[in-house]
Length: 227
Image 1 (cartoon, rainbow, N blue to C red):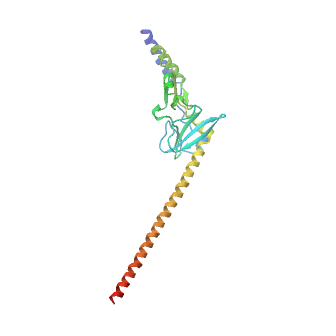
Image 2 (tube, rainbow, N blue to C red):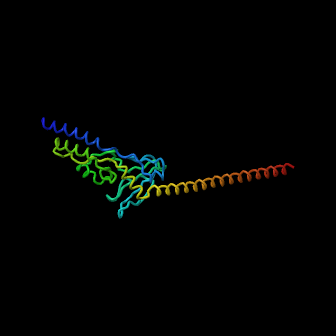
Image 3 (cartoon, rainbow, N blue to C red):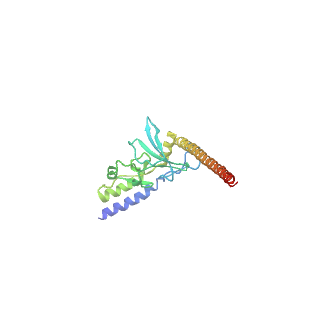
């Protein structure tokens, strides 16, 4: 018992020491992205309205397979990723299955990965990186306390990987085109609606004029009968 306690204490200490050597996910925004949209951030989940892009790595490069303005949480194979882009270009984030949302980090143990193998989440994504210090320390503790049954990897959201995919796929320009087309369609719809309103007003005015003329005619007929 004392031996297990000592191992556990050492493992906790090891976790603390090694995790201190690992930096948090980068908040740096690549100049190639910054030049396209000045105020964008990389978030850990979709925020607001926007576009959901299904991307796939083909021949060593990331390509946008499809893009839509309704949520997408499932992919067809493990070479695909899903990114959300806010409609005002304020944020980009992975579009993981909401039921599997874990924030910035996840314990990717074999049992969980097997159980949720068909779900799209951090442990099954290209957008994760292993935190080596936390993984080693956690596995030491796991093997000491549970015969390694809960051993696995500690993984975190890797914003640099997300940015690399965004740049390689030209995603921002694709979204800008979608926004521009939507704005054009909205403008056309507004003009059409304004035209309908004007037509209705003209018809109403014509009806009023006809009613006035009819009233004048009735008055003249009434006067003629009176004479």
